[in-house]
Amino acid sequence: MNPTERFEMRAERLRLATARLTPSAGFRDRVLERVLAEPLAWWQGVAPLARRTLPALALMAALAWAAAFRASSTVDETLATAYGSAEVDW
Image (cartoon, rainbow, N blue to C red):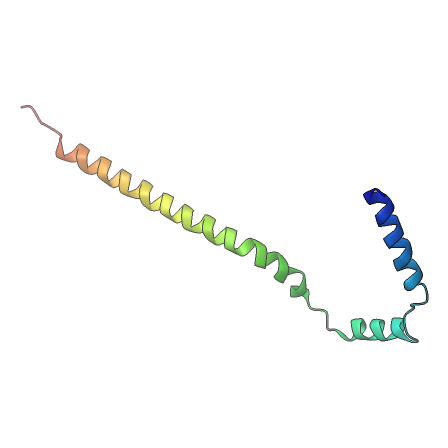
């Protein structure tokens, strides 16, 4: 017996065992009532998106700040070196 035949036998046994299962009376109506009772806010769509993107955006902001600070320090050092090494001949 190969794995496919075993799977098919198990699937058939499960189908026969669950053939009589059906939702209870009024199940669909109860579900719809609960769904409609939930308040729908504009931020419900934003919150899951923000949960994924906010950490990445915070990291990018920190890296941008570090790059700007480093560039500013490099410019200051370059200007300071140029002023300190200038020689004047009369």
